[in-house]
Length: 350
Image (cartoon, rainbow, N blue to C red; front, side, top):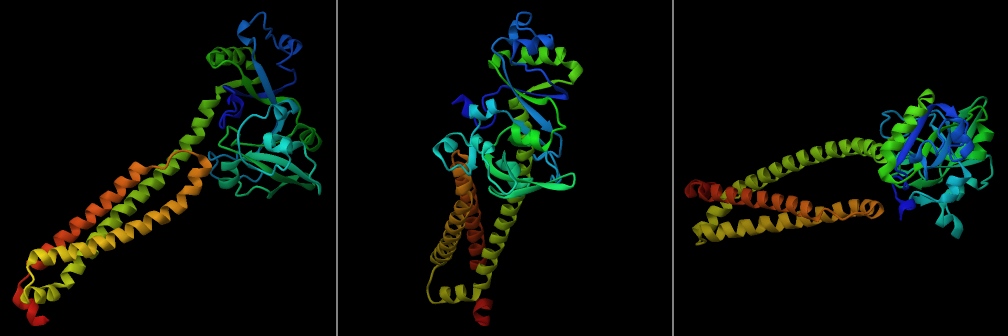
């Protein structure tokens, strides 16, 4: 469903302006006041604007290396709230209407001077270090504003800010006039032409329009960099662990030289002894791999079920097979070295 699209909410374009716009770009009068009459610019026909008031503040996305203390706040209009766009990872919705559209929580009175706000789930967890239902204290002059997180968006373009209702915003920040953040609903093929036109005609306001996919890609690029770093560290750990495993198996076989020499002396042939040692090591390797795999699945399955998508079965199987192969190879090498040791000297020490 287009309007429930997790990342962009179905909006192809996002725009911000340095100076506030006071005219409604959805009305004929507002467009005429800004020299954007649809009769002069047919490309603007059927283009709808969702506009937001903005209180400047710290970026709450992964692009900010520091924990935000004074987050940027957007005011969601009644029209935007009623549209019910974007997908939620979790919310404090109780009624059927709120569960269908968790944005309605922004208009709910929760008492005790608390203001309901909604943020992206990634920003809540990794930037704000808060969970659903917890509060964020915001200093405003001589008093503190208590913002309660009532909804968590699923990987949305709102990772840099938190959102509250427009009536609460006007009551708390009456000095923030006009609108400086916009989401444009239009046919995707018209997006480049509309962006170029608006940036040209509204250049005096510092109007900048970008595709929502580009904004999301910027967030994902940083997240993927972190993931690649941790993946590289994990790969290095796997290589070192496999080398350590090979060393342990080799040492174990070498320490059993006296035992192997005694078994050879009473009639066991080297091939049978090698099969015994390799079987023991494969049993231990298999038990370790199964135990580690189960623990890993317990750790990652909740994240995959929350985010969606298939488990990387092929890559996991390849890694486990590589570890098993390395272990078997080390076991065979250690057995061969141990069985080729001088029999007489090993029996003397035994």
